[in-house]
Length: 481
Image 1: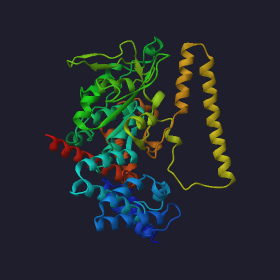
Image 2: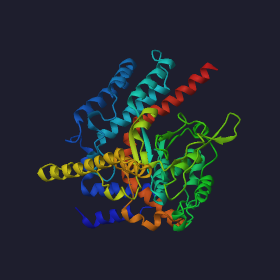
Image 3: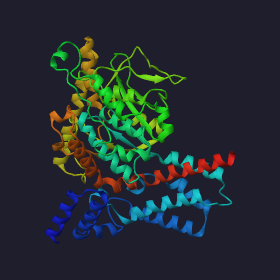
Image 4: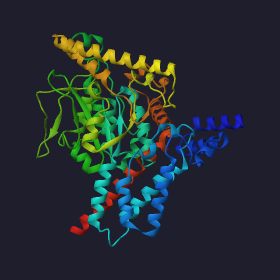
């Protein structure tokens, strides 16, 4: 093994300015290190390669013989997102680029089969039957969502993640963003694909959200930062559209969680189903209102005449990440999501995240895992007991928020996060320069490049279902007109 050549590849990957350059260097590294040889072999203890080979051969044979009835039956009965453990993250730890060729060939075959069933005419598989098959099987299979965490200014990292996904055609339709992530979600949710190229440039959006009012303002019972500056920043980035209008315009399903300041209210997940008339920019403002830093926000909506009116005027809302940084369960229930791509930038979470590795076994690993989980359980239990036993309204609310933070899951099936050096405490609450914005975007792109092929594979089939359904529904509408 030529160590000098490997180091040269690693340097090329580190300094790559686009995914194509990074990919070429990664593939060369795999060739030199032996990863490419591993990729070409079916065998591995990390997945059921015999099952996947059998399914691949079956699909190819059915397509070759034109046996549509059996093909549809096979897909309907045998499509699962983790068939034979193909979603195992360990399968992506042996190479810098991609995974087993068998796995990729199987996913490509399924997607090509779905495209053929959608686009070709078959006497025994009419349009109505196609629609029913795609709707039911797609519903059963599920789809992916992009979850954008809070993180104040560090949330600009999300822009690089989103840019890389969009450039590769991998940006999920379902997107959730809380706090800083809500601004990123609202921005892409109100811009069409034709407009996004401009948005992703460092001067394509405004990031001046911070104007300090000083600690004296905080001591007087106000807030540390000027809420009107944050509102102006969001208005310059997010069009004055409701959730429903944005969905109709872009096709993206934007979800923004907000947390209540009232004791007997519950957090809400706003989207085109739950709050179709609410203004997205106002939801992002509320979700970004960190208590003590920005004032609580009253939501606004458009009435049936298009006039802007207060929405639930007696209630005010704050930072969505307090109660639901990554509202996975609610997103799953509303949008048929069962796979989550998470961009995590919360400064109190990122230092504790790490890349998945093969699971260790033995007494030391067991002891470490027990100690960690026990500590987490005790912290949650103490906060839970405290919030239920203090009569003080302020202290009770504080403990309730602390319990919510401690109880949440901050990672997904695929989690992307910045290096800990990316930001300091001063960065978190300051307006970045254009050079700093470019660095955040570049860091986000580079962080997700090593995971793009895993994301491509994980979303391959669900993307084929979504595209096929769109084409079939268009044909059905034309046939009915």
